[in-house]
Amino acid sequence: MREKTIEKKLADAVKSRGGLAPKFTSPGFNGMPDRIVLLPGGRMAFVEVKAPGKAPRPLQEARHRLLRQLGFKVYVLDGEDQIGGILDEICTP
Image (cartoon, rainbow, N blue to C red):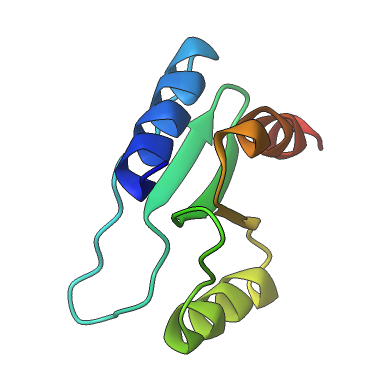
């Protein structure tokens, strides 16, 4: 399965839960996750989407650490079977 397909399935799953998953671009600050997931109740997280079996690049991993140090949830998604679990975890206080 291609990364683009997984990313579309994530966006559709977030929408079905009443949320948004806009594409995230950060000019001048490379390595940021692909999507910001915004769910009802003020729940928010960053999601890096990868093709199955692919890992984040070192710069992406550094950005993920930075975001986590700031208190944000960051997920790496490389299969559609992970989507439900990630969204459930984002919704958990």
